[in-house]
Image (cartoon, rainbow, N blue to C red; front, top):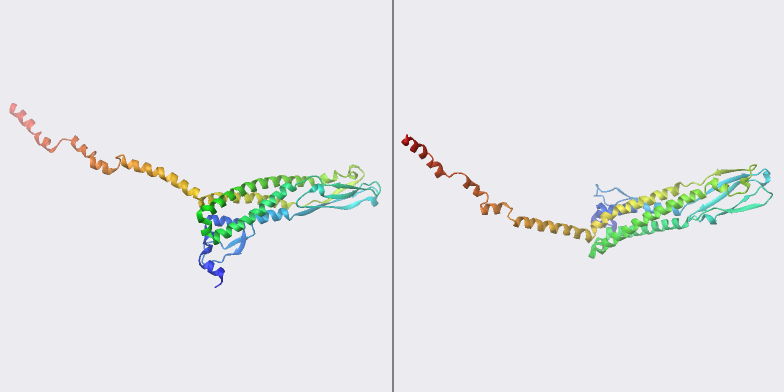
Length: 306
């Protein structure tokens, strides 16, 4: 039997059933079959790609462009195919292109406006490190649980890192959403045409042949906020693994135990009532059998007097 089958038969992958490992598996989003045939109730597949991979792949691997055309009165000076290409990290002010001026053979050199490299690079950096940490944490949690729980250091480190990455995902996704909005404005064909001097003349015809496709960049923003939700939702499950959660439960249970013990010592249990005769004294409130036996003497003496 190969080592993988031995690990599967020994129940090593049972950790995936737990909420913490399940959310880790979602972070890893792997799509391959599990090696546990006996786990029919468990997930059949673990997604192959990480949410983090989708985030940095759709952003860091982007390259797009737009095409414009300038039709001058003098057709020989026209340029009907002006290609402007840009890509990650979106330093648009460094993207230059040449356009005709429709004034002889002179050409105008222009550049796009804006620089969204800081927000894009920060977003990709968070995604890459989140992927690496998720991969390492999942391997440790599944195969080295004893080391993970030793001295409670593993859960504490995991909890702190999860909180930090949740914050980074929120900040990075928000910053990149704003950066993407700036990229869309700077690469809008209408905005680019306004930069050309030839397009300011009414007798020249300027138009956009095609606009850049931003669908993958929109997807990166969506996956960024999905990663934030995933990591933030994982905080509670990681916190339950720490000693802080168990110590908090003990702190809450100790006052309850003290309160219950003082309640029992206060004489409110049934044994104290039975031993003290508290309820038994109610029997003395009624007349005794001897008193009931002496009542007939009253009417007898009355008849004698009559």
